Length: 189
Length: 189
Ligand SMILES: [Zn+2]
Ligand SMILES: [Zn+2]
Image (cartoon, rainbow over all chains, first blue to last red; front, side, top):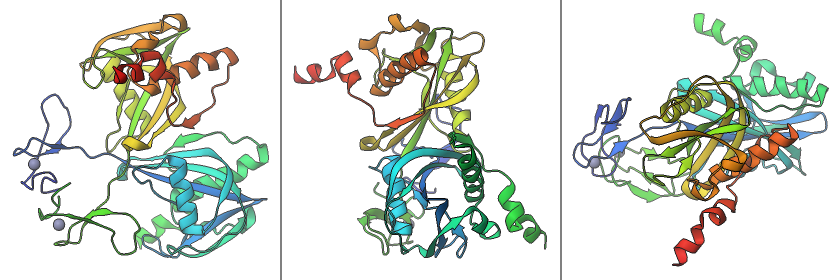
């Protein structure tokens, strides 16, 4: 951030009076430009013993498989956003939606909120996807998943299915994705 | 938003190519200024059959009682933010924290994420509070609560205590607060 979005003056970075964090502040109009984490909302569509994944048509991680998700928009609820993304990315509707998984990704200032729901009818391919497909547990392309959160939510979902209990977890993403996709090995080459 | 925070040019409001929503766009540097909901994180501190509330020293709703909560900061997890706010507003530490309640407030572009936890030791009064106090169910000042979410989380908490089950709910705020504080009546006068 370089300029004040209110008055167009140059902003400076400093700790405002009564605060304890550095903010972008406009000395011309006194506006404090707070920056806060963004929320990504998504939904895991389930059909029988399978889950619906989409292969990404956009960067980052173009060509890799993911769960429908995207940035929450102003004016919508978390569930509305999750259902919108499911429609946009997988041309799919779900029913019996329920909250399932929250992730913290503090190093990129993001929060993820995932629901799960029963796939209701057909599915297709949205403009941000190359293809969509239902996968049973032994068909999941673990080394071709887009992000750590995708690995985590799928591992947990198939474990939870076995117990029939679906606790709502809140953690940072785990390390399994990096192992499965060979992320660290690739960085070292 | 009037000016581009990147280059200082005037922004225009339009639907970018490939999008379906109006955004603030800078035609000079092509930056799209997305605006997204902000997340408020908080914690309900519990001690025996009582909960810890704070009386607000700041607007809005100065003088009314609330649960410790505030905007999540970049670089922190939801729980870290909730514990930070509990410390800042009630000078309190909690233990055995667990996710408890999510709210959608789409008309003001906010999401709330509340934990609950056992009050651990003393509590006090932070700079944004006039006082802090433990309340049992029959002591809650229902007509002096600051926001609809405070009424909802307290009503639910004391009901949940009776069953021993604490389901994690996600809804918009309910209508009870407005009745309790006489919000609509006041507007009509
Ligand atoms: Zn300014
Ligand atoms: Zn610009």
